[in-house]
Image (cartoon, rainbow over all chains, first blue to last red; front, side, top):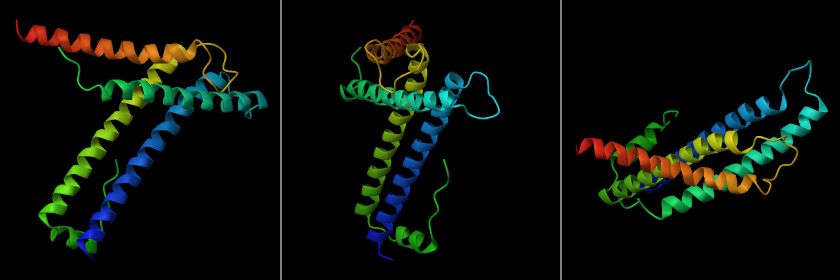
Length: 83
Length: 95
């Protein structure tokens, strides 16, 4: 294997694992928040109301993620603050 | 995070890598590390600010007129707080 191919392969693996970790964290947080908000008293199955709440809750959490990401990045891009 | 699985073939190729390639890989790893740190902070902040700003009944998937600015303020005030802590610690150090 050429070192160029090895380099590319290593980079791809790192990128993939970073993306996996990101997705895993998002799923964990989504379920943590939405379970707490949408299923206050777990019944024998997920009711249609709970399902509807879940869909809205997940969309809202992801919208929040995007807003926070934009806002935080605007600070990071300004560089370290001056003292 | 999981350990990287590198085949023997890849490992051999990596050992024989030129200095230029090594440098490039180092730069790549630095960038990815920084990206991962920023993403981690965004996860933590979203968690924190969602708790504080999304307190009403969840009926729509979009952020409403009060939630959006609350999330933005939450990030800004968190940054301020971070600064306050750092400044305070610095002043203690120089005393």
